[in-house]
Image (cartoon, rainbow, N blue to C red; front, side, top):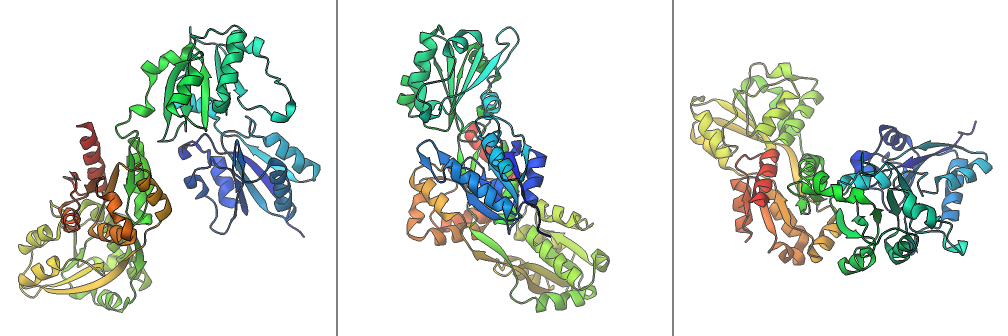
Length: 505
C-alpha cells in the first residue's frame, strides 16, 4: 500500500527561532521533505531530520528563487510521492503567506494538508520594538495591510478612504519599497502627515533596526537611512509608547555581532547566553571534537581502575569521552568507588554530576598549575594518577605531578582538529566590517581559527578579542592578538559577564 502524503503549511514566525511553536517543531522533526523560504532561521531548520530533503524556495520582492505556481506544483509532487512535507513560511501562512493558494492546489489534487499557525510579524515585530498595536485610551483597533499588492491587478483594491481615518493602528507588511505611494494615499484620504510612524527592519532578530518617523517624513527618512526589506511600517499614536516600552534593543549586547569559535557541540551554551543579552552571534567553530584514533591506552587504564588513587579530568569533553569508554567496557560509575576524582573547572565538575559523581577536588583557579598545587597535599610518593584528556595539551600538569613523586598515566580521551565551519559567513562579516568581537574559549580555538583563515587572518587584527582565561590569553599574545576582555571566572558564564561589563563600561 502506497503511503499517503501530507503537507503541513507551517508558520515559522517573524524571525526569532524561539517563537516557533511546539507543534511546528514536531512537524519538522517528522517530515520527509522541508520546503522553506528566505525568512526561515537556520536554527529552525536544524529541527528537521538529517535525512530530510531540503528545498529552498525563497522569494524577495524582485528575486524569486521559485515562483509561486512552481512552489504549488512542487508541494503536490512531493505529497503525491507519499512524502510528509513541512512547508515552512515566515510569519503565519494566512497573513499574506499565500498558504490558502497552496492548500487549494493540494485539495484539487486530492492531497491532505494541515495548517500550523505561526506568530505573525504584524504583531510580534511591533512588540519587539516596544510598540503595542492596541493600547487602552490610545488605540482600540488595528489593521494589517499588504504593502505590496499583486502588480497584475491593474489598480489598488485597498480601501484607502476607510483605512486612513477609521482604524487607529495600521501595520503595512512588505511595504518599504512602496512607502511613497502608501503615505501619499494615507495623507490624501485624511490621515495627518504628523501622525507618528515607525519602520522596523529584521524585527525580532538581533539585527533589528527601528526608525521613528511620521507619515509625512517616512519615505524620505527611510531613503536617507538606507533601510531595505524585510521591514514593516506602523502608523498610529501607539508609536509614541516605544519611549516607555522599548525593551529588546535595550539589552546590553544589542547591536553587537560576536563570533563564537567553540566546537559545534559546545557552542550553543555560549551562543544562548550572548543572544539572551541581545547580541547577534555568528557561530564559526574553529575546532571539532573527534574520537581518539586509538582507545587502547584508555581502555587498558579502565581495566585497571582500582590501581589508581586519582582520576584527573580536565574538560567536559574529557568527562563525556571517559564515561563513553567506561560504558563500552560494561562498567558504570560504581567502578570509580575507590578512586578519587579531580576536575579542572566548574564546567568539568558539573559534567561529572550528570553521571552521579561529585568531584573530590576542584581547584579555585581553573588551571593545571592550580590543580597540581591543590593535589600536592593529597599525594604520597608512588601514588598512581590517571589523566584522561585531549591528545594535544600542555604538559604542565603531568610534569608537575611527577615532580611530586606521583606516577602519571596520560591517556587520550578525545582529539581536537582544526575545522572552521561556517567560514563563508564569517569571512563575509569580517570583510564587511560587521564583527565587533571574537571570543576564544581555548588555545586551540585561537591557533585553529588563525590557521583556517590563512591569508585572511589579518581581518581580526583590529577586532576586540575576548578570552576565557590566562592560558587562552597567552596563546592570543603569542599570535600577536591582545585580548581586551579576559574573564575573571574561567567559565562560559564568566566570559559572558566579562563581555557585558566591557560594553557597559
